[in-house]
Image (cartoon, rainbow, N blue to C red):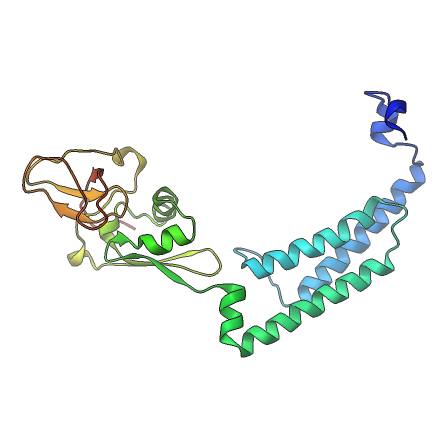
Length: 234
């Protein structure tokens, strides 16, 4: 239909665009067939469920969805080429799985590798910035694990699935640390003597000897937060 022939708010065009009611039955059949083929493809590749996907797995599933999308409602799209496309995609999946299982360099390139983003109660900035994380995002993940401050955390590993594995200090080893709760994260520029403060950027915690302007001894950031203390409560 030419642009000049389009009538705005033409509900017949918007809803059916000249297709017959019988075509809706064909669309329903195509949708069922593609749904079954996608499920079979995922079962063949061994996907039991989807919680956190690696980049490779996400690309695989998105490609399946893209390959099967148009054929559902386009009457001029034959289904056999789509089945061939699915077979090729699944074959590529198995080829990459085979290669990654036998070559560590390919595995690291495809899947990435775990990164320690918290160590001894402070952020490892190199890895946080490399993965485009912000301290606020990490604190949100820690709050979901009932972490009140970074002094409770011995280390945290960002897995290749995108999940965060957290390892805690024993209660007797917990130290003051950067708070994770939003209402405790007010940035400050000055310290008061004999209080603990955590750098607002890296989380490095130290006791202020004097009331003075704050400068982090680790990353030289000019802002801090009042450090929290206390053991973790499950």
